[in-house]
Length: 164
Image (cartoon, rainbow, N blue to C red):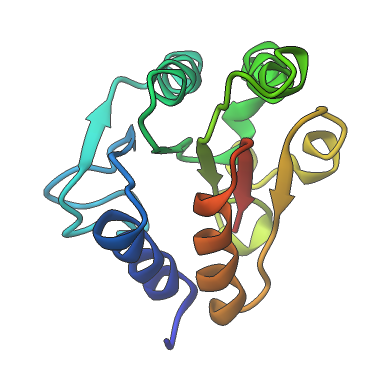
């Protein structure tokens, strides 16, 4: 693995082929580009959504509750702020149902100034995300970490937010 995006794409491919990932979706993640960073390029289950972060999170919750294993992407972390109430529901469902209802979803979003996205595409949500109960937050710093953490996130029975 030479780059972060190659590691993410490889982990998503393994998720599709071996871990039961049923849907990889978000803003512009489907064909032909596979996202603004090409992280989902060539994946079989990738499909595009409207530019609606709340719709993406709500769809991910619904798919997960229906027994599917979705991986949803919000194109830039800045736009996750208006989904906090839905993220709280996803995180609390497993615990509030006494473990009867799993919400095995993964949310991915790029964060920080390293993506060179200017003022509205470079904020970090990680500190706030760690205060939403019921979520595992992973933030890889190397391609190897991104690959391993994304695979372990997909195996989790509770929601996981991957910030890279």
